[in-house]
Image 1: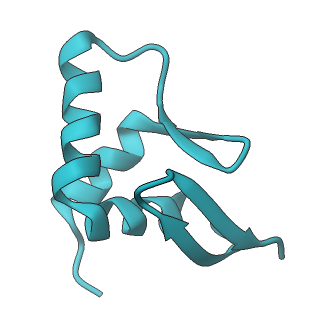
Image 2: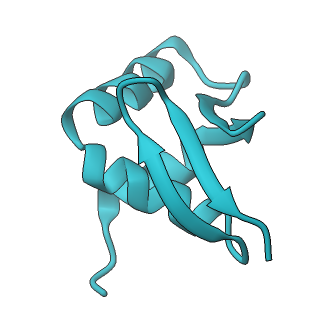
Length: 74
């Protein structure tokens, strides 16, 4: 699979808390705005970043509208 600049950047901005992807609390206002822009305009890249972050767990699904992650623990 090709590397993705957007997914790689989202991984730097994201933390997963209680099965919900969230922007890191240490981000600037600009970075937080960019995080939510990625969320809104690049849902596939956003989901790819989540799948990469939760490895070695198995990615099942990500509900973009409710911001809920489903995965299988390995």
